[in-house]
Amino acid sequence: ILYSTIYREKYKGFLKSEFPRIPFTNDHQTFQHLAVLGEQLVELHLLKAKLLDNPISRYEGQGNNQVEKRNYREDTRRLYINDTQYFDKVTPEIWNYYIGGYQVVDKWLKDRNGRILSLEDQLHFRKIIIALTHTLDIQRRIDKFYPEVEKTLARQ
Image (cartoon, rainbow, N blue to C red; front, side, top):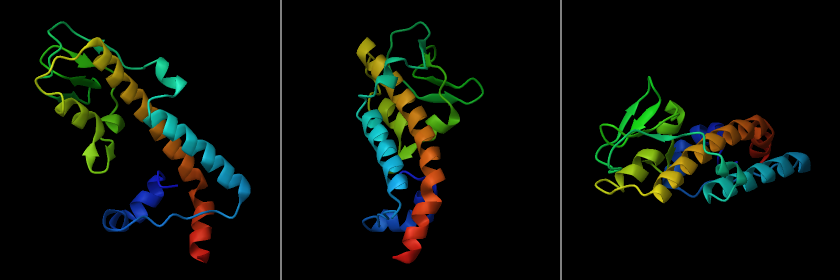
């Protein structure tokens, strides 16, 4: 439930300063659905999910594969690592996705500034993009269950 966008927005200040209050639903079926979604998130974030074997983004352009700058172009949904090379199909949602105060894809590239991306690095980054795509989908699904969990919070 901590991945619910509704929960995160509602308790934003609390989440920054304290340990999160974790609500549990009394409804077994809701709990089971959320447990499955949580398991899917774990697999995605550990980059172990089978879904990641078919990345949606491609690495394009000619060049030396060196990360020189990070330039996101929303109109083309391209994330450039230098003047000529980019990852495509990076949606604004993916570009603007934050975890713990860090913009995930920008942070990953920033940490590699000045380095040459190996084929393994390129594939890893493409997996991150698809993992975030599925994370956003799962968050929307979790949000559908949030009203049931909110009822439990009101009773606590």
